[in-house]
Length: 327
Image (cartoon, rainbow, N blue to C red):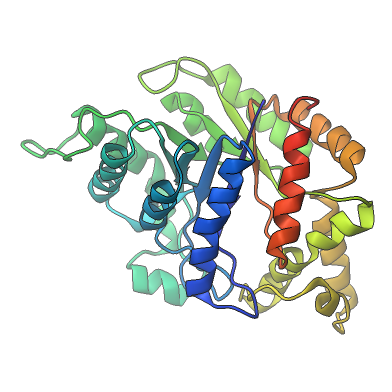
């Protein structure tokens, strides 16, 4: 079982986007020291609480600051980009840091209508995701529909692609023979059914000979269950707030979040969000994580935890690394 980390470069109320990006690079160095397998960064546009808007640029900074850990994207949102440009960007990364780069791909478009307009894409852009993925992979193999076009330096290289998917998206990963990254956002049963379809329909090919499942979730480990749950409060509240206000805000300290005058609906959503994540003492996390891994048939766990307190988050990851042998 491999353990990896996704960092979205969360903005904290006492910092700003520039500091968040520098924190991501420093955090990657610490995560590598703890022995994690991969470190991925994300793509979000126009989000006040997330600074990670250019994942291939940030991945280059992370790869340059580290020496062993694999570095990638979780993910590049392909509907926002031309596949040729994405292939070239990952080709440059692989040329500079050979054997360490991952290409995680997602189908999301902009979070708001204004962002989608600025990107020149409507919601319907996600409908062409399958064709975009095929075109992107074709630029690496040289098998595409553009005579005389070569995606230098990507052509001939093999950057491992991962498909970020939920529900029906797992079928595309199976059809294309790609590793699957999935989260239990609709519950473990729905996730397990999607993974089963993925494994049953998997077609071995040039990119992977066997199915490979990465399950992603927020995880917090501390001395007590209350401390661990508290570590997840800041991001959980930002998620709840975004659902009702349309804006994912910078992270606030847990003490301030818990003192807010929430509506009954907001407080219920906050508790539901926290319940859907994994937190607790070492033994409690081992049990819950073991159940999740079994439900997903996972080959790897991608930890997505963000927290207001960076040192507490790092301590949690250190404790989680100690669980590696028992999960």
